[in-house]
Image (cartoon, rainbow, N blue to C red; front, side, top):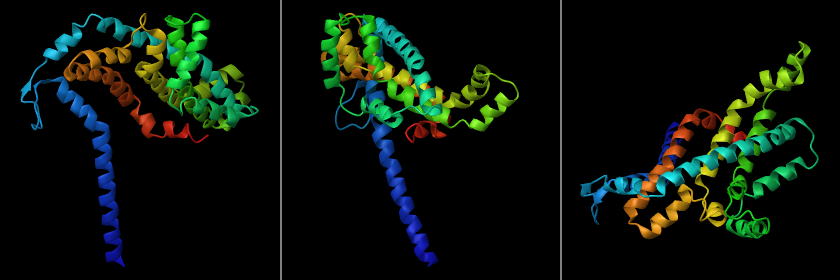
Length: 274
């Protein structure tokens, strides 16, 4: 029996190791490949690494006339969309968590379904409405179309964060004389802050990486970094596209590393267990 258990344990370890290895390849493989291309001067098959290294493509991309504007627009839109999403969704999340809202689960499933299907059909339908409202090619039109990708994060995860705050702590604060607002800002909000932080970061990244809706609504007046990728991929060699992809990935990697403790701690997973 001990020998059987040891053999079974070794099989589980091998399968787990293979799974982790495949996950590493599929997640980090493309990033490593893009990084190699970004610094490749000469790279021909069948060489596994570039035969010559160079930063010339970085210089060309940074000399691209629209790069600075697209970078600035990406961060401006991401900041505005995240702030607006927080203003709209956080009160709704608190209401879902603390009050018996009629049809609560159905409403939350509807919010989730907006991100569960390919969005291009939804964007095209919305574009017809935007044409009628003269929102095509406007700053506010791009903000609205990007807002769709942030609602699910800014509602589901904060709802779980607020619901996880023990009501007994709020009642204790009320018993010693704290009002509703003071209880919220002194007890509820600090305890829910990790989940809200994860939601804010994911919403910011969703807005920063949004391309289809921004392309449909914003071009040619507002061209963000993901939209700029289209012209780079079609008009430039793969090295230039790789450089731009690395630039686009840097904010995502940095922000996810900053909140990794909360993500690994389950704040993200709790958001989808409501």
